[in-house]
Image (cartoon, rainbow, N blue to C red; front, side):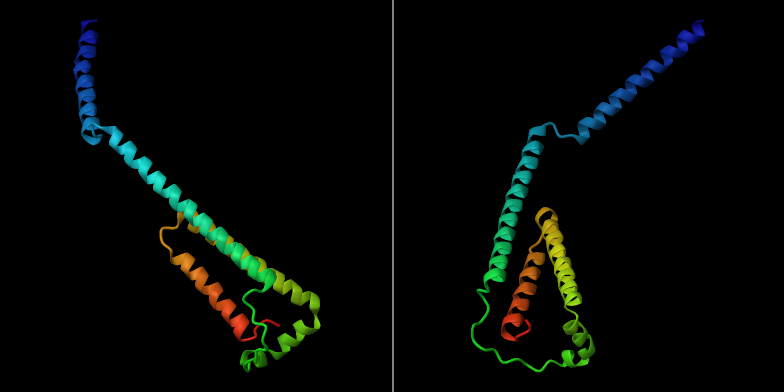
Length: 159
């Protein structure tokens, strides 16, 4: 019976040493003033929230401007625009004739491609607002739609 008691007592100092080591490791890893860390995290969260709000407002205003332009044609020129010779149209003459003759296929292709572009824009905008760390995506979107609008208006690509 004594051997059991002695064996139990021999493990107690090991547990005490283990607790002391864990306490020292925890104290060494964690700074004594946790309020500084909490304040720093709160400041980062506030900056993140402000940037997200600014990005969301900028994107909303941009989409509204594009929608108003699409509905009322503010950027479309009223003058008669002379078109350029379209080599790609000549190469794809048969495909163009097919879509000219089949109105339902033409509309289906336009609707499908427009929906895919819109979904792509929405997904990329969402990712930029919540996970974006640079303005590269927004500049690319503005450049793409700006150049697209320029060519549609100035080079008579809308038919």
